Amino acid sequence: MNDAGPIVRASLHDELAVRLRSMIVEDRLEPGERINERDLCELFGVSRTPLREAIKVLAREGYVTLTPNRGACVAVLTETDLSDAFPIMAALEALAGELAARAASDAQIAAILSDHVRMRTAFENRDISAYFRLNEAIHLGIASASGNPTLELMQRSLDGRVRRGRFQANVSAHRWNQAMAEHEEIAEALSERDAPRLSEVLRRHLNNKLEALRERMAETGDALPDP
Amino acid sequence: MNDAGPIVRASLHDELAVRLRSMIVEDRLEPGERINERDLCELFGVSRTPLREAIKVLAREGYVTLTPNRGACVAVLTETDLSDAFPIMAALEALAGELAARAASDAQIAAILSDHVRMRTAFENRDISAYFRLNEAIHLGIASASGNPTLELMQRSLDGRVRRGRFQANVSAHRWNQAMAEHEEIAEALSERDAPRLSEVLRRHLNNKLEALRERMAETGDALPDP
DNA sequence: TCAATAAATTTTGAATTCATAATTCAAGTC
DNA sequence: GACTTGAATTATGAATTCAAAATTTATTGA
Image (cartoon, rainbow over all chains, first blue to last red):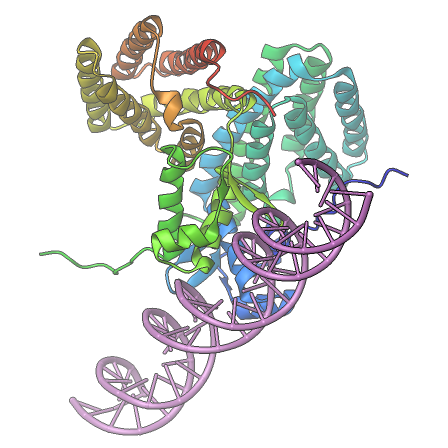
């Protein structure tokens, strides 16, 4: 039993930041909604001090916007925000792929390919929930396999901001087919450790994702126009 | 007199974050040094509450590291940190260049080219201080001209973390010549709005910068090895 | 003298308190 | 009846206070 090591219980502000972040990502807090400190303190059973620290961090991360003397609001994600974020994510993923193709361990590649096979099954079964879960695992796996923690952190950070609940659901059949085909390419390039190709496919994959999102936004009007 | 508009005076924690950030970037705070809250409060003439909020933000930005019940330390920049950061900066700059070549206004391009000419003069005069200042202005100008505020913010953020005082001073004559030549290419590509070329040169420029830094670190031993 | 332990001090983490700005609501005016 | 004006309420911003953990200093015993 090797339970040694110092006991570190996360500090309150850190735990609160995690909770608030997921509340926002999972759309449990409406975009634009004002954040009432007193209410949240009551909800979490803490005082305002650590909560305010957490809010400051979330503001820096772009999840909330701060207005002096008027507190915090859940940040609203405009069409421009999405259009801005995706090229960056594409560039970062392309870099991650290039690095991962060279630096990943065989075990890491095997794990990603295993997720890929399972995702293909989910695709064939039209199990969108499992598909999304595995899709995320694959992208995070590549980020991790890049061996560049800073890069991984930045990808996660951007991803979290963009990946608000509603934007996940619903994909056109066409786009789903295309995405799956791209993922076959990704898996192939990775298994062959073909860095330039993996990089190129990932960039294309992300750019197509944005294109699909744009189309969906245009027809559903779901996505918030610019302010 | 058009003095209208809402009066917004920055909040204390925001101002403190700015101050602390520059103290770290300008090496007025030793890397690894523990940050004593009481001392800083006295220095700034504020209470601990807003200071602690600022520290939490800086921690998220990577300028300080937080240890539970043991407070904050100025983050130490290891060789690995630099090696990790530069490929990301290269990818982001390449993207910024590609976007800027297409989206920049003629005025923005003119401003950047003007800085370039002045930087060339600084280079010829061996005025390293002016050279660095203009160099930064050019890179920030390209980031801004990309028309992608999110990208600009991420570039600034990474740049600030890497650009600690000591790493600026001293460049080999060879590297300085090479950098200036690259900047000539950058200016040319930008003036021609040649997106692929600008993108390529900027990526190469950043990668060479890392290479030069690595060499310098190897000989001076100035840069902190990994922990 | 040195190591180990215990007391004292300092420092951080978090709750509370206080001041000020924003919001709400009611009264008054046109 | 709508619009302004001003008091009451509420929320935020920041200082202070309190508790707990860490660090330092002092003390004891070998």
